[in-house]
Length: 429
View 1 (cartoon, rainbow, N blue to C red):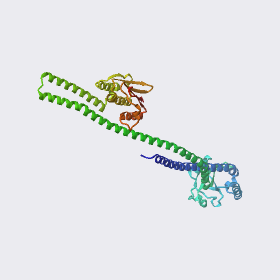
View 2: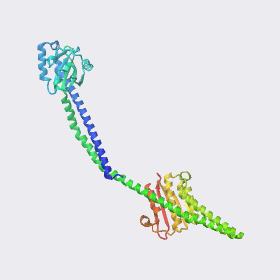
View 3: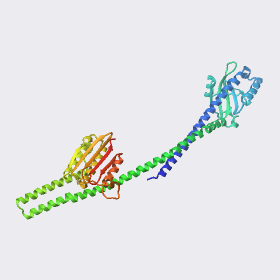
View 4: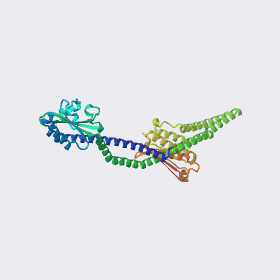
């Protein structure tokens, strides 16, 4: 059986593994969120630049490629646009011709526009994508490494639709993702760590409870095994000292009558005594059968089972008063526990009490079923039940553990010369 420390250690290890997995997931999610925010921010910068700086300067001379107009446009771009992480800009027409670029070698070149670029141009919208540096139009950007392309549809002063393309360093996007991670990671990881630390005492408490329940189950199992052994020894002793002795005595009496040639009166006396002894033996065997194989409480009910026990006790000469009005419709488990309690109590009455009368009562009240067995016998010191070192009353101790396991209780009240009262109370649920 695992120790409490071992259970807590395993729980903590599992919690640490989950914590690390969640930390990695949070980190990845935060980084992706940061990259997404950075991409949106780049798109907003490109849109503001396109509307505020690019469009007002797109006159017919720039579109026609006039050298003086392009020189002035390039000066404005380098002064107002090419800053920070923005490293390249291009201006395209609908035919894929580069009208302007801060890289002069690209100006005038024609390169096919893909579907995303054409959509941004026609719909005058913003779009973005990671730059493919293997494309011919991007051959002069390879020294910058990974880039983020942002496309914005613009219109010239003449109304002609054009495409403004800006290239941002992807390192800035990654840095934005890391910044978001650094902002939220301490809070998230701190909360997870606090949760883990709070759970450790709860896990320790749960582990101690599990250990306690395991010990209780082991104790109940030992009591059940001991009770079973004691029950077998009791049945064997009753058979040997009771029915076997009776049958042996009947055999001797019949043999003596057969060999001695008695008269008719003596023969009738022997036969009558043998019949009486046989009936007593049959009654004792029936009582043992009830002990070995109790009646089916689910079918016959607790009242019938208690009546059978009472009849067996009455055959020993003890008067029994039976009140089982509260025994109807009890759950099988509840009825079984009350029957075992009655069985043990009546067995002690028959063997130890010298009682003349016993009263058996079953009542149901407030969700509890209660069995009471009250005799007028010689009684005993009830405090001896709780002292295992002393002999006797083992059956009552085992029964008390069994009922306690079902959230019930067994109460024994007795004193020398004052009779004995056994109360078993079991929940209905």
